[in-house]
Image (tube, rainbow, N blue to C red; front, side, top):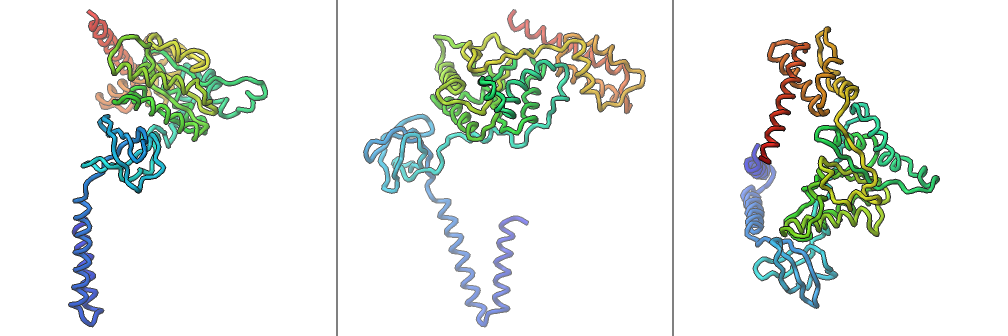
Amino acid sequence: MPAKEAKTKNIIDSIMYSYSTSSNPYEEENRILKETINRLKEEVEKFKATPLMVCEIREIIGNTSIIRIPNGNQFLVNLSSDCEKLKSGDLVLVEQKNLTVIRKVPITRRFNVEKFVIVEKPSMSWEEIGGLDKQIQEIKEVVELPLKKPELFKKIGITPPKGVLLYGEPGTGKTLLAKAVASSTNSTFIEVVGSELVQKFIGEGAKLVKEIFEFSRKKAPAIVFIDELDALAAKRIEVGTSGEREVNRTFMQLLAELDGFEPLDNVKVIGATNRRDILDPAVIRPGRLDRLINIPLPNKEARLDIFKIHSKNMNFDKWINVNLFSSKMEGFSGAEIKAVCTEAGYFAIRANRTFVTKEDFLKAINKVSEEEKTEGKDYLGMFG
């Protein structure tokens, strides 16, 4: 039932109840109608009220303050008597007509950092990742072991690495490794894409980076996963646009958080990128992202493991030889092997079958291979 109809029904029910219980039903009806009119007047007044603008305090000067409005402009404005103990960085409500600061907003964060936190951790397990045994062992040593057994490092007298960089070609399993770490540890998992840290106004990106790491320290033990790191941490250049300079400011804040005066403690950082060659050397030096783990294209044995993982729930024809498919998928990434299994299932569906045959897989391999060749030609065509 719509809200207006429900409200009208409640008023009618109240009037009918008053008729049955009151000695003077007309007086009771008038009282209810007056209360209803007063409530409606209050609602109308709320809609007529002038909206207040949320601004940031830049500096306090006596009974005045320099504020920055949302479009980036700054003004010197007066403070109302209700505003006390304001400091730089506070958010305040400002009357739009004469820009008078009305009162302080009871929050100190411009960004909702908690939106980057994965409340329900991924269900990915180490057993669901094939062909990366060496890489799994390394990431367990760098990320999982220090969070689960920090006393081991204290007894030996060493400080565990602060972070790890996963690099390699697209579709090789970098994000899967991060999901598996999130699932295997009882840590707060914070997932960020590098481009999300680049903001519109000067200083906003750096402030967001700072708040993410402040939040992670409060929620420690925690893992900060920065996907597509090259969007933020590319090599710095001397000449560039204002946008590129803002990206550099945000990047420098990230460097300070990774290896600055404030320790990371039980916060581990995982970066992932397809373009290690364009990363700035400052972010991959020892002391920041210490361990560099290459995630290569799978070899024959690894392709077989990945194929078995993605096809374990498929209904096969009994004459299928999976070793044959592994040799025919040379050069395929893990994501492309998964695509082969999906395409083979579609060929079976088109033939109105409930099982997948050898021919379905061979046609799927050819299809994925042809798509890869076409994309490669298009990529080379971009450069003439």
